[in-house]
Length: 285
Image (cartoon, rainbow, N blue to C red; front, side, top):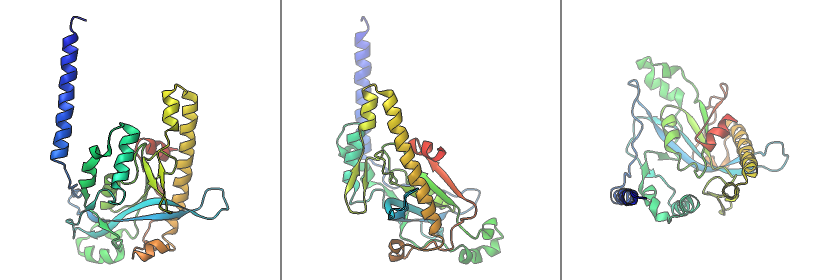
């Protein structure tokens, strides 16, 4: 009680530092995210990106295929166009995503995340995936190990709680720059702030689990999270088969964009599952 003024002073100082940090972020945003650097003297690939709705077959169901919102990142040309930048957030979804993220996390207005709307990534939208056989002809004189690779290894990345494939793009970008094809999903279990469906409608975050935790209903909370995990696993497994199918047959949406992975994917050595937070638990499960 004697030192109440010390506690008050610390709280005021902390508040001032937080306000100053917010002010600096707003005034001097880091809007350009750099291309992954070279490693071991090897040039990184430029990275292509395509956003589409991936047709999947529900596990254990004979129903018609459904669609999940997905993003593919993949190597395209090698070290030829590092200057092309695209918005980190899809302009048509940026305000909705920022508002939903702040609403379901910190209960603050969406403009706090306006720097997300300014940020840009070094990606080539709807670019042609690299043709390793053609590219290898250019590398034969280098006698590199890469010239022996004839197909692209596969990764599927699962986002965490309150995330989506947009907010996690940079990690898979680094993998794609190293020669991987990375599929990212927007999970439909209610863990993302908002997901746009194929029909144009939106699926917003499900607050049921958080409410169970706040109300002290821990057993019910665990059961609800396990139910979400089960749905995520089902989505990941269905998407895996759809990704493997792209090596055999292209889908109309990708074909209309001039993007094809037919005979370019490494389907013989399996798929690596990765994720962060809730996505990590999904990948491990």
